[in-house]
Image 1 (cartoon, rainbow, N blue to C red):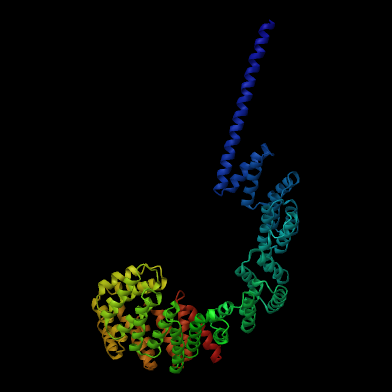
Image 2: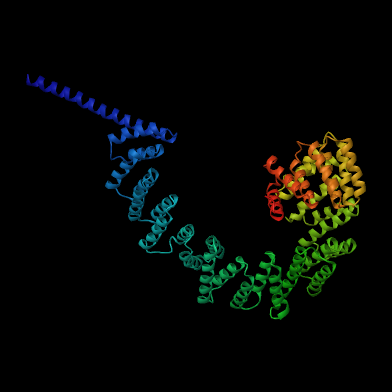
Length: 608
């Protein structure tokens, strides 16, 4: 009897054990499946379903971090801060860390409890241990526009980690965000000494120069710093940059003289200043700096460079001040020729010869003299870049004489001479060759070349080629219009305005629906304006505006019309024309200029 009872007990126990194991296995399988579903819901942005499953999982195993953070992430996605904040607070009590307090602070901030959020950020700072921790806390604070707290976090981080230089660049950015130029300036100098990056220091200082009070403080600070560190070239150059930025070029020149002495006194820094101010188009101070090198006799090493650049500065100043008189051109030419005589074989001599030829061509209109200068340059410096530009200039001279074949030969010779180079002049030569073929009446060949050039990496060339390609494609059904238009353009190059006008008027009459007819209006208007016949130009453009209401040139017509009305003292009508661009052509390339024109006209005529 006992034996049977014993067997029964073992049998029942085995069944219970197997059932329990099966239950555990099925329960485990259920958890894994729930976790997979919850994760999938979260990844797909279905936060409500994800939160429901993660809540169930978290209740089963409250110590499982995967379930806990899955629930936190889902509640954050739902912006359910009422449930999220207590969940984070409980976790922070059990397992406090910088990361958990950041999540808590961000949630409190989002819920509108800024005071508690700031306290939580402080706790996050207290528990931060690594560089990444402090950066993470400060970045989170800055996202909430808490720049003062973010700054404090990095300062504390530097002290805790025993290296105050760790976060200097970010600290400076926070000072800039707060407009705290007094504390930022010393940090910028320390950063400059640390990384020796003058452009970075200039950028940080420029961001602080937001008002006169800040500018005045920065000036005093930099002057004192430059005085304390007289041998520190970077600090001196930073002050010199400040003077240039504030248009105080005279003090900047005096400072560059001092910097030059630190560098050995050979004049290099003075030349650098002269070149910088020439690029800034500050002609008077630039010329003064060049004269220091040319006239004192102390800086022989840089006389050749200064002489050429001095002539360029005179040329730039003269062009800006109402063009170049013949007397001024002769003065500039004598400077260039003086340089060429002194340094006939230097690369700079090639550039000087190019400038001479361009002045003779464009300012003196002496094509024969210019041609000789360009040919001499090409002969003496056949592989130098100025020779490439000289060949472009020569081709233009030949074209303006009507010698298309000679113009094309000059360009093809240039392509051959410089085929291994990547000079931008080569792309210009290709564009010029395509135009010559077009002007010669070979429309199909020109169309093919323009389409290839429309893919050029040079945006200006690509745009010009694209416009020509559009023109030639638009008038495929009117080949006669294209042929006549190319002849009209050639006549204009030859200064035959009478012949060009006759052809353009014929295009308008016989091909009124062509693209060339529309362009003919603009060419005719420009010819009339150049002859001081503004009323006739205005009448012609007004006619175009009504007859070609849907033209892609509508905005161009209005802008040109406004310009001629303005010149003709019809201010109200000019404003009306510019205003029409704003109203009817919101994507026009003339939009910004039209606004400027309206503002200028209203200010100068005291109109409402």
